[in-house]
Length: 458
Ligand code: NDP
View 1 (spheres, rainbow, N blue to C red):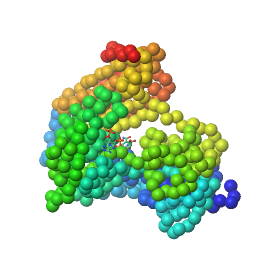
View 2: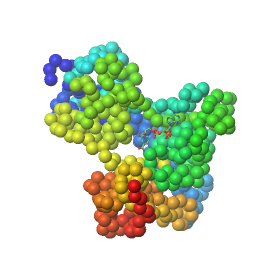
View 3: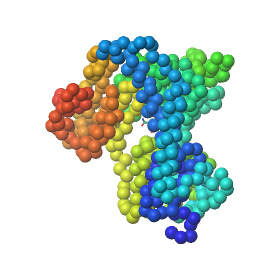
View 4: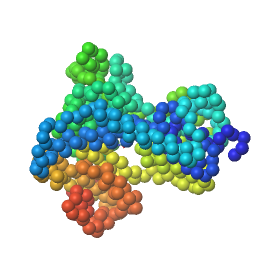
């Protein structure tokens, strides 16, 4: 591929970009990757990884309480130190970022710490030093950035998930705006770390699009944990005061807090990237429009991950990046399958899910069988904790195929990953029934739900 400075220029060293760069280099391509913030991207630096570390931190609160039922007496009341957690998290993500760097270097990828913008279909400009690099292919892997919504006076005082990890002071009073993944996860973390958390959102319940029983079960658990959930409510104004922030709410109420977290979705990160100038077609929401092969309408420009707004999850970006490199540099013909992607919401308790919800099945299938179980997890017997685990299997009654499995409970994410294999293989309810239970476990419930809870016909 002579005539170009490099064979592949990747913009963004996050999950998708790093994977694509390494695999392409493995095929002998000359690859350069530009990153304007920190190598590792949202997932490693200010997303999934630090979030999960904070989730672990938050769960000790209940572990300390639950221990009493199992015979433990703590010598004194446990004390949480926010700064220690932030520092420990920082050390870990710095270690991970360095590993990403090393892996790229080992693969022979050139890393440039600079913002890069597209000039035309084969040229990228590095803002740090003004250099222009020509590339046979350009891969846009710039991810997304938080949207601060709604556009009310004083929104500039709110923070996003980018800032919450590194707050200098622990927010004793936190107002969360939004009812999606990020909102429920942080509300769940901060209430356990000791914040008074209020969560406001415009819908009638959290997690729009999730299975209805999971939404109800989670909001009950969140209220029980102390989150002040306020559906159908949004802030109308945020003012800075000597004591913190005063938030006016749409019902006329007032809330005094230390921080306001806007968790109201993320936008594809394409602003100012020069894509329109290069002729790249974008969707109405700014995401790059791509075909099955992650190629844009411009032959030499591809995009993977959140910037394409397909399924905005790290493993999906990695798979897309890998397939791109395999196809373009390895001569393969790999189609990424976006169906039945398992996912989890790392609240406490977690939600783990794969396949479609009951609501979606009832809209799309002629006859749907529902198998549902709600029980007190075994650990709660001696701890006395008032909690429920909910499991649901959604079945196409005509074919017996399992269309979706939804779990609210401990380790639901871990279960969903494994259930993903069965659902992807086309498992039938009879396969679940024919599987021997593992006792005592929560997941055994999934293979012992013999009696249908409901049947719905269209
Ligand atoms: P989500 O799309 O999940 O949720 C956005 C929330 O903000 C919804 O409650 C939505 O309300 C509300 N909202 C959107 N626009 C407005 C507005 N203008 N005014 C008021 N409310 C508004 O986004 P998140 O920010 O929580 O997360 C972004 C993405 O990150 C997720 O979609 C997911 O792909 C990924 N993610 C995945 C995680 C995981 O896998 N565990 C964890 C964290 C993030 P409504 O429902 O009414 O539209």
